[in-house]
Length: 173
Image (cartoon, rainbow, N blue to C red):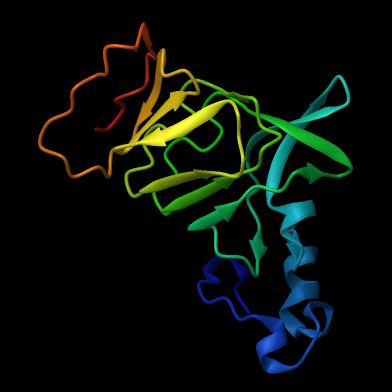
């Protein structure tokens, strides 16, 4: 099997085997790929600061998860996820939806810049950010963080409450 050309993903449970029983798994590992059926531990690159996890991006790996609809867990490797770093998911053209846990209080500039197909960022009981009409704002709507480039609106009016617009807010819009 030429692992550089792996394009089809099969959920192991659908064919009645564990991931480690799949013949391709050992070859992928031997070629430096990470293989897992646990998104919490393998899909994200993180940096740990002050005992908290900051997501810095997606790992280059083969797994059984669909990264088009990305669900960020509350914890990674035992650390609470509190931030998404600058440019963390930049230019991830396959990304359609991201679900962000309540624990995330900071999202870096350009974190979703160039995600041309991103249609929704959902927040689970988050007190720090809000999505409205295809735009991501801080909770009090004084900061326009990101305008989703997939937004099909012909015009956009920045709300009067906005005092600052992130540098990459309209990247690829």
